[in-house]
Image (tube, rainbow over all chains, first blue to last red; front, side, top):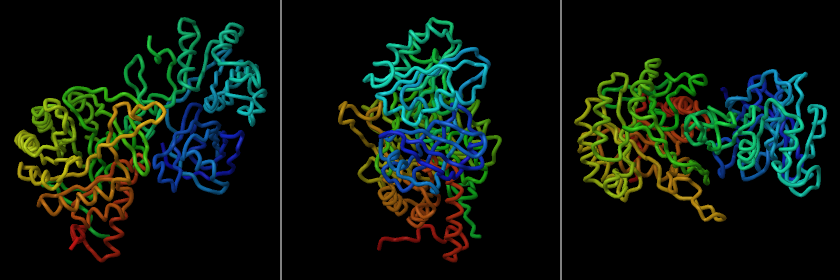
Length: 254
Length: 304
């Protein structure tokens, strides 16, 4: 990992509390892989002194890196106010990324901002793998700014709590149908933990492999503070170092 | 270029900036980012006799200019420490401070005597902020009589310099410092975290899985500094000052207050190389003031 000051190229508001920031630099953007995260320092903020961990939404492999984030508190609010030209100290790349290999068919399941690491993953997986996306959110406005998803995925399913777009209800009310229709070899998922638990429970006795990207509060992000623990079948693990990507079946009890 | 090396008993540190326990790992994680040999000393994460899982999540909660932590001393126990952590430090020359904790008085001397055998361990720091399980869970470091017995037995168990890391959750920290000095400590380090609480107003549960936690970070610096000043004027042995240091100006305040060396903790999470930049900043300050050695600045501040 390294510490690098990245420059903000753009900080776009996609919907009421969802932003996509584009950063440029020499080193970290070239090193990030799908599933990695970076620890971002938001300066002049006595309310939150620690760096903030964000999944990499996209890295072009050269100079550009994008982060998708939701404004949830003082740190992210401050981040959303930063302008192009400003510098952002980033520490990374961090974490264990997704494993990829030549699957015939994969389903990516995103709950809300869980789309972030999955988007990078999808962009990095080439043909001929067939990629299906199940994308759930509170309402239609969340999907603003994701218009080009139909160029990346072979099939798209949207689910909204209020039915304002796509299927109505929770992802897991509809996922079983999508799953049976497509019979993928691999599932990648990211989103609220209760949803991930339901998903892993659903596929537990199936053949399909499943990886989930987890989230935990972090102080350091690089394996030192012991804050970000995740209970797994192999014992207590650190989300920043042993994850954030885990084999889904290692999590969530028996 | 001033001389910023300092000595604690027979151990020379090339800079007065130490990495505090629980904030630097074993250096393995950070080795790619900085040259570990440039740090004054590294304090290992607290080791206990038995392995510990630590507290349930959440283990940290951010507050204004600080964090409350309730990690719960997660560690793999002394056996793993001597078989894996100590050998790892054979890769480096940096002075290495082991930090030990017990839940019964006898465990401190036991740990000290085990570590006494390992040449690579340069000093042993006693974490006395643990709950004394046999006395209702009150911190060892709060009771002068218990602290006296704890330090005396630990010092007797090893020929290595023993540093006593004081708990600040006391009425008169200078009193505890004098007890530690009388009992044979080679140095005092302070402060450990301040006992703290955060409440979630929606769930009415504590924000931390462990309930109470310890506050650290810039928020505690003014109090830590006051305590370091008081302790430095109460004992003759070296004082290692810590609590919210995140810049060389912070560190210099502690040195002027009387600290022989300083320890940096929470700031390492934000910038793992900060111990090095703080040392550089101390050097620049000494040059600017015309001091040739850091000892020219140590304790130069007096309230009256």
